Structures are given as structure tokens and as C-alpha cells.
Amino acid sequence: MALTRESRTAWPDGRRSCVMLAFDVDGPSGGAMVDGSIWRMPRLFAQGAYGPFRAVPRILDLLERTGVAATFFVPSWVVEHWPAVCRDILASGHEVGHHGYKHERYADLDVPAQVEVLDRSQAIFEEHLGVVARGFRTPTGDWHPETPRLLAQRGFLYSSSFRDDDRPYRRVIGGAVSDLVEIPAPVELDDYAYFAFTEEPPFPKGHDRIAAYRVALSNWCKEFDGTHRVGGLLTTTFHPKVSATPGRAVVLERFVEHMVAAGECWFATGTEVARWVLAHPDGFAVRGEASPGGAIAGTPGPGA
Amino acid sequence: MTRALAPTPNRWPDDRRFAVVITVNFDSELALLGPDPAAASLDKTLSIFRYGAIRGAPRLLDTFAERGVRTTWFVPGAMVAPCRALLGDVVAAGHGLGARGMRLERMDRLTVRERLDVLRASRQALAEVTATGEPGFRLPSGEWPPDLGAQLLEAGFGWSSSWTGDDVPFCVPAGEGRSIVEIPFIHALSDRLAFAWNFAPAIPEGQSRIASYEDVLENWCLELEGCRREGLCLVLQLHPEVAGTPGRIDLVWRFLDAVVETGDAWVATGAQVASWWRAHAHGGPEHPVDLLRRVSPSSLA
Image 1 (cartoon, rainbow over the protein chains, first blue to last red):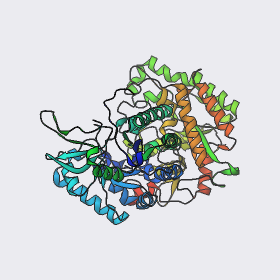
Image 2: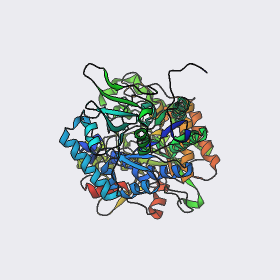
Image 3: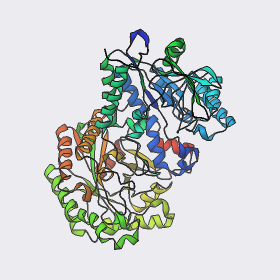
Image 4: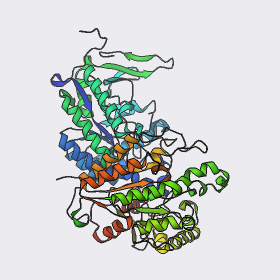
């Protein structure tokens, strides 16, 4: 047995690793909707709307075929305008989480504005779906220093936003260990890094090539294989409008089949992961806010 | 019971399972000169695009003839006169035509009057080459002005291939309850976005490396597989100066082989698909263009 500094994380039923398959159903929301320019860009609107309109139904079919439960982070503007699709997500046994109203960047919002987005979105979820969100994923980059406190106060169980681990951990807020779990999401499993393309505004900024589907699939499988080997958690940031075109859905299905075939992997929704972490406080790290000096508050835990 | 679209017996003619529309954007030098007339002195750079007319287009025509497929060529009106002989070959082989404005004008930067003038002039230019089927329109670049549908109808265009956002054709509002048929594409199915490259001016803006030919063919074939699975409409965009090199024409050959080998593809021109869709459009959930009109009436007339 090789020496290793990596201790094993315990997953339910002795499972070897955990996968939280997750999709961000942004639809046409985002910067152009926040600044209003989307209303002069019907083609861009349609490109985004493709997500809830065509791609989510295709993904729900795929998940049914493969028998995997997933987590969908949905801006509440999308819930308001595609309520039937969002209800189908829940009816199919999946979970919905918070992702802003119009995909606002939390770092740009003061506390009252964040409260407004959070509370309005929960009301929309309640009205159209009969549930409130227990999970949160930052739309567009960073959150505000006060965001985690606002989430914990509102009963959110987890965020899936950071990049700093390949295991979930409990977050320190204001110097105290909170019940807000972070489920880090690596950029390697973000389809924007491979496939996203818009003519105007240009994305990627230099209009880089669309990656080979085969290469993306190979990278994703390697990250899963590694996660499975070290017993960690892998989550994805897949956008239905980006990675569920007819051809990319073929690749996505192969990726899910690859993970299922590995066996002994726990496919969990965000809430299931968070509840497992909270129920096993000794099994997971506690991490906090970066201090002004750059040191990290909190203690490393198993697997750190 | 699937939630996504699934193949249905009468979505396409003759029990064909899915549709394939091969399109050629024959922009030629106007790809550069349209947006930037000052580029007229850049003879070397312009020669990149002239290669399309000199070598690429005839090579594509031979390939299409060899494979027995009918395609659709979008041509800026100003190229019709200088390329009359070549376009004569295009229509003689049974390919359809479409317009790209006169000089690849950005429609969202013209006044209503200017737009209508440009659209009418390009329609007239195409009329000088007699093609089968009604001519279509493909937006060169920029956004779709809210009333463009109505102006296209007024200028004599009944269909377009300018949007993304769907896997089958849809109807774009064109004023007074009318609509035009849109045959949408995806960015992954474009040779230009994968391969076009220039030093100065920089193409693409970030000058990323030319993609692997084999990888791009594999992407195209995966999209073909996905489209066939659900009975959708695949739209490929080719550019003679890009796809028509001796090495890359091989990709076109092999992709067309893959299409033909399915045995159940309806390879059709844009005009054929538009005319079929107009007569056989199926219902379904509210389309995003109708949703857009509902929530923001000024976005789409």
C-alpha cells in the first residue's frame, strides 16, 4: 500500500465516491438581461431560451434512461417563464436550487438588493413549484462577503460555487461554524470552458474554437476517474443550452454512462450531500472566509 | 414517452427520419470589404477570399454533384454580377439561392428605409440568376431588428436561416399576424468558426489555433447522430475559401458520406424545407420567439 496523505471520505453505504450531477438552467438570463440589452437582441434571447425550451426536456429523458438524479440551479425568471418544464424537473425526482432572479452577480449587489433577489426568488419557487430552494450556486462569478450569512439565515443548506476542494465542507461564517455546506464545483467540469459560443457579445472573448466533443468527454471522464480513485466528490456546471445540443447530448449521455458503469459511486442531489455532511461533522472539513492577511480561518479536516 | 422531440412519421417528406440542409455562404471578398471598405488595398488578405471563387466553389460543386446532394448558396447581391458564370453553374446543378444583403450589411445598423432598399436590391440581383425554389435570406452579422421579418416579406423573401435556438424550423413573426420560416443553425456546424485564420487583420479576434480537421469532422458526425436520433433538421454552414482546400474538402466528402449512409436523411434545399414546414408545421409548447413577443412586444414585431 502506497503512502498517502489523502484520507478517505466516508460516503453512504460504503460508496467509493460521490457525484452531484448539476445543471445551470440560465436560459436567456444573465448580463444582457440584467442590463436590459437582451430586449434588443432577439437572436441572443432565442439562443438562451433553447435551454429550458429544448435542452432540459432532452436532459430529463437522458437522466431517466440512465437512472441518475440531478440538481438544477434555475434563475427564478426562468421559473416564472417556463414553469411547466421546471415542474417536470421536480416530478422526475430531481432538485431545483437558487441561481439569482436574472442571474445577477452577487458581488455587485448590496445587502438589501441580495435580500430582494433571494426572497423574491423563493416566493416565485413557492408559487410555481410549491417548494423553496435549499441550495445556491453563484451566478456570474463571485458572491458578496455577506452572501453566506444571508443564505444561512434563510435556511439554505448548501452552496455549490467555490473551487477550493474536491470534497464538501462546512463553512465558517463570522468566526463560527455554520450549517451552510459548500460543495465545490471545478471549472474543468464547466461546459463554458469547452463549448459556449456567442457571436455578440463575443464569447469566448477572442472567439476561440469550439472544443472537440471527444476531448471534453475524455477530460470529464479523467476527472471522474480520479475522483472515484481518491474517493472525493465531483459536481458539474453544465448548462443545458450549451451541452445539450443534439450532438453534445450524445456525449453527455456517454459521460453519465461512464460514471454509472464505474459502480460504487453515490449519485446525490445537493440536498442529499449537504444532509450527509451535516450528519457527519467529524468526516468533513470546516473552512471559512479568507482573512485580510490571506490566512484561512477554520481547520483542515479529513481529506484536506 | 419522451419529453424531447422524437422522430415522427410525417415530420419530413417520404417517411424520411430527419432533414439535412447543406448551406454555402459565398461571401467572397465582401467578408472583409463589406464591414470595412478601407480593406480594398489589402490585396493579399483579400486573396484569401478570392480563393473561394477560384478554387473552393468549383471544388464544392464537384463534391456535391458526386454525392448527388442539393445545397443552398447564400450570396451577397453585389457578388452576383462578377460571379455570374459560377452562379450559373450553381443553379444549373439544382442548388438553391439566398441573399446576404448587397454587401453583407449589418441590418441592425441601417434605417428601416435603408434596410428595405438593400433587401429589395439583393432580391433583384438574385433574380438575374434563375434558380429553382424561392430565395431565402441569411443575416450576415449583428442582431435581428424587431421588424426585419416584415421587411423580408415585403422584399420578397419568405424564409431565413439566421437564428440559433431550435433544432427544427420555426416561424418568426413578420407583422400583422404573418410570419416567415426560420431554418436555424448551430455554431458547431460551421467551417469558418473552426478553421478560418488570418494574421492581420486578426481572424478570429483571439487568433486561436486552427482546429483539428478530424476533431471537427467528429463533432459534425456527433451532431448528425443526435439529429437523426430525434428526427431534427441539421444545418451545415460552409464557406468556399475555408471548406474548399484540398485537405478540407475531404471533410465535406466524408460528412456527406455519413449523411447518405444513414439511408433516411432528407437532404434538401432551404427553399424545400421552408415550403414543407409552412405546410406541415406541428404544434408544441410556446416557442421562445412567441414568448419574447409576449413579454417584450417591442423586441419582435
